[in-house]
Amino acid sequence: MAEIVVVDSKQAAGELVAAEIRRLIEATADTVLGLATGSTPLPVYAALAASLLTHPLDVSRVHGFALDEYVGLPAGHPESYRTVITRDVTGPLGLTPANIHVPNGDRATLEGAGADYERAIDAAGGVDLQILGIGRTGHLGFNEPGSSFASLTRVKTLAPKSRADNARFFASPDEVPVHCITQGLGTIRRARHLVLLAFGAEKAAAIAAAVEGPVSASQPGSAIQLHEHVTVVLDEAAASQLVNGDYYRYIWANKPAWQGI
Image (cartoon, rainbow, N blue to C red; front, top):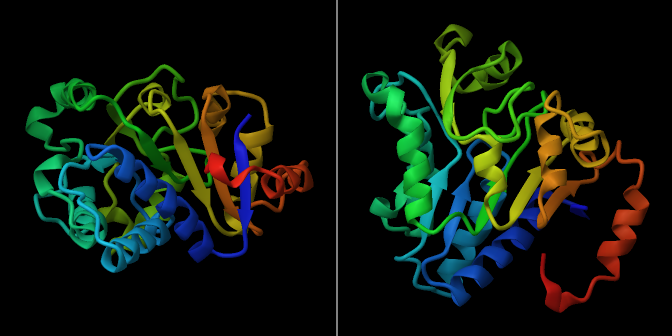
C-alpha cells in the first residue's frame, strides 16, 4: 500500500520531499523529475531552492517533465504551465532550461504532441520521482474521472469543476481553456516513485478515496494503489477523513530513518 505521512504544516511537507529529491540528485546527477504545477507543490520547490542555496549541488544534468499544459494559450501567457514551470521551478532551482520539458499545447501540432512527449520521457530514461497533487474530483494531472488507468499523454476536456478551480488564476472563468494535454495515468504510473501531496480539508475526501477507496476510474487518484512505491504526504486537514489514520502515523513513527520515503 502507499506510505502515508501526516505532517503538521505545508513547510514540513516541502522539506521532507525536498530532502528526498536532493538525495536522488546526489546519487544520480541526471535524475529525472516529474513536475506538478499549482499551489500544492510550491513548498517542495521552495524548500529545495533553499537547500541548494545553503548547500550548493550541481543540478545542471537534472531533467524535468511537467504533467500537463493548457491547449491554445499563446507562448508566454502567464498561466501557461511552461511559464509557471520556468517561474516556480527552473529559475529558482537553477535547472538547465533545455532539460525541462512541458507538453506542447499548440493547436497546430496537437495531433502528435502526446506521442512526442511519451518518446521524450522514454529517451530521458523515465521519471525517477513524480510529484503529484490531487484535484477535488480526484484527478491526477488533468486525468478527470473516467480516465483509463492505461492512458498515455493525450488531449483531454477539462471538467467544469476543474475549470472553476483554476479560474482564480485567470482574469475571468471564461478565459480558462476547455482543453489540455496531460500525461496519462499509465504514463504517471511508469514513474519509479510517486509522491502525492495534499493540504487542506477540501482535499480530504479525494485523498480518502484515493488511498482507502476502491480502485476505480471514477476516482483517478485511486490509481496510486496499483503502484509499488508511493508516498502520500498530507497535513492534518487533508488526512482528516482517513479511516486508518492512526495506523499510518504509527507506521511512520516506527520506520527506520535510513529508508527515507
